[in-house]
Length: 125
Image 1 (tube, rainbow, N blue to C red):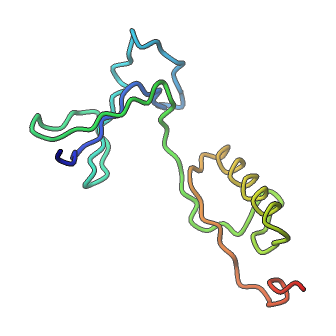
Image 2: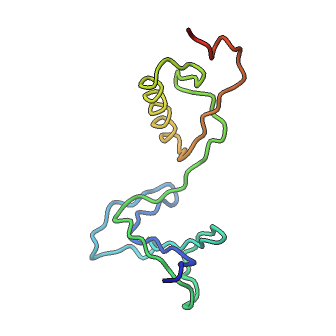
Image 3: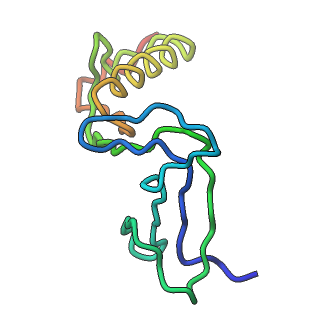
C-alpha cells in the first residue's frame, strides 16, 4: 500500500476568527471542517490535492482543531523552576502544572530548559 502524500482531517470543530463552533451531529457535517495537510511540506489547505495523490483520512469526531504556539525555552513558570528537583513524583506534578497552565495561554508544546546555575543546586546529599 503506497504511503499517502496528504492527510485529510474531517469532522473537526475548526477554530477560526476567535470562535470554536459547537459540536455537530454527523448528519450535518461542517463543509469548512475538511482540512488537507501535505506530508512533504507541512502546508495546510482547504483545497483538495489532485486526484492522483494518495490521501489518508482521519476523522476527528468533533474534536477541536486550533493553532498553538511552541515555547522553545522555558526555565519554569507558575511557581515552578526546573532546577528545583526534590523527587520524581513532585517534579512530574510540577511539569503537569506547567503544562496545564501553558495550555491556557495557547501553548501546545514546550521544552523545559535548565539554566546554568551553581553546582550546589544540582548536588543535594
